[in-house]
Image (cartoon, rainbow, N blue to C red; front, side, top):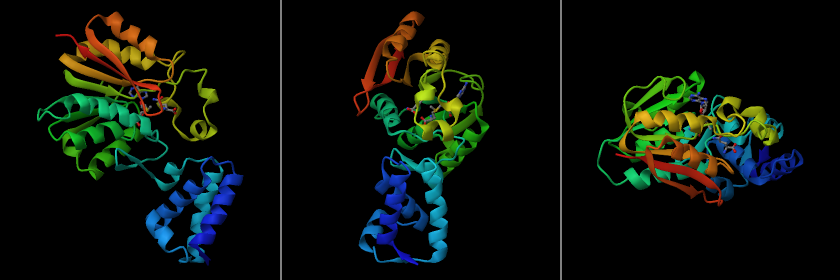
Length: 284
Ligand code: SAM
Ligand code: GLN
């Protein structure tokens, strides 16, 4: 038996010793999820005792975190766009900066009562496609991924949030499994350059899928193909929204310009001040 206050102190110390950069937060999130409760309850009832069985179960989770596994894979969930997404090791854990991509799409399409046809390429957990489906009740969304494991997770997330009826999940390379033209192309493709990948934190490299991140010598291999094929797959006046990585603005801008069919090419920063979203409109 051990009470919550003691357990939180001990876990925080253990995780700090294991090298976690956010030991107290990790300890709280693990404990909250393990007990299926919220932070308020942990604060209000620090004297609550956990049984020996509960302590043993929790210590398995703590060991996983000490070995560097991201908290979201241990708890099986991650919040994105204020929605809880199931995640497992078949999918990239959705990043907060990717919410900027959703915000940009909604800046153009959020107010209309129309029926945009949207493709989310490399949907992973379904974060982008499901968030857009939840915000745009008139939208039809095709979500594609090369990974069948990821598509299974994305489907369950669409079900969980009640939008599966307006989404289709297709396995294949970029646009390959889809047909027809789209009003919106949105993607957070892999964009880590090959020589940067070995420099990523160990927790990412050891646990998140490589194929969700690696993207050729300069990291724009997927942007290049999406922009090129997008020229044929966007309706006139349709828009493309792509997440980009550090230092990729100039390269991606040239890729749009080379096609000749794009106008209004613009970029926006994320809340950390990094250039993060590229947008362009297909000329009419
Ligand atoms: N959209 C999710 C998000 O923002 O959290 C996941 C983005 S993750 C950076 C990139 C995704 O692209 C992964 O799910 C990966 O499986 C998928 N992917 C990689 N190569 C692909 C390809 N050739 N065609 C389609 N999807 C691909
Ligand atoms: N932002 C992610 C990371 O730093 C990379 C996502 C991507 O390649 N699209 O791990």
